[in-house]
Length: 161
Image (cartoon, rainbow, N blue to C red; front, side, top):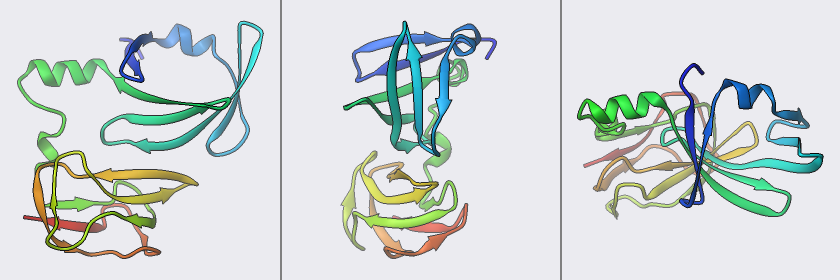
């Protein structure tokens, strides 16, 4: 990470994270989504509660408090400065699985009106719940999955109109 990334926590506090701060991090992985951290001689238990990889947003529990984290990389700034939005490639009429997993929640019905950012479904992958959100304001044309379905990466989940 030659150029540092910015991390916004709870839409309030912003941190800059670069290679040096990552190298200094004293962390031990305990499971797929749980980590033990030492910072200034204090011990913390951190776990990934949910992740939205497309929007680079995460919910992280540290000890008993949950934090909403948004990551912004130098590439995000470059794309924005060029006049594009990160979501412009997603303005399609299909929602596909970003990774393999199991559908554990379905929040919409055929014919329902949805707004950009609304959670359409929950995909569990590697014991983490991932909210799959709507890329634009639309109407649900078709739903290609049901709760309990196992899906592969790039599987069609929902068609929009």
